[in-house]
Image 1 (cartoon, helix red, strand yellow):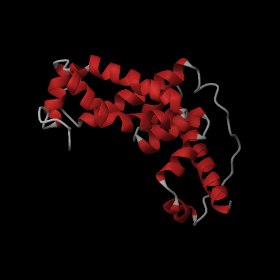
Image 2 (cartoon, rainbow, N blue to C red; image 1 turned 45 degrees about the vertical axis):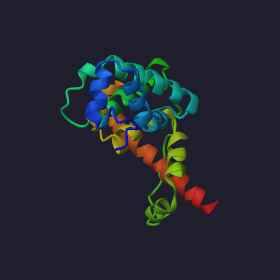
Image 3 (cartoon, rainbow, N blue to C red; image 1 turned 60 degrees about the vertical axis):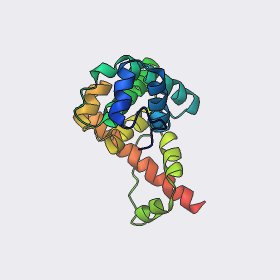
Image 4 (cartoon, one colour; image 1 turned 90 degrees about the vertical axis):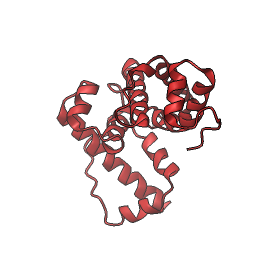
Length: 186
């Protein structure tokens, strides 16, 4: 990992510098992770400007809470959790999860060629389709399929029941499959 400074030769050195409130260490950490953390916020929020604002807010929270990183587990995993939580807080605060459009009564069967179509798509195309999902679907899809939360954990985090989490995920997946097929035909 290239940290861009001989002063910080490892991630641990960089974390130690941040713990000492060294601006250069904070800048390096920001530069190292900003794009990835923006991507996380964007996957949940779907709006680039808001995602950038949340990413900045997230780093303020990271720097204020660096002492809470225990060193057990991956640092990036600790960061990801902060940015997922910031995104979820934003969605809850703006009631986006409760007021999201509902796509009901979907009876879409997965075609055998869907996996082949997905393999031909770029990551940006897939992220764009995910971002077009209603907020509730997008949130549950991200938490389950990308972040690896269980439906029980999602239910607890979002204040919904497990069946709702499963249903939202299933519907999100069906909508994505339909949109992927539609884009392939276009």
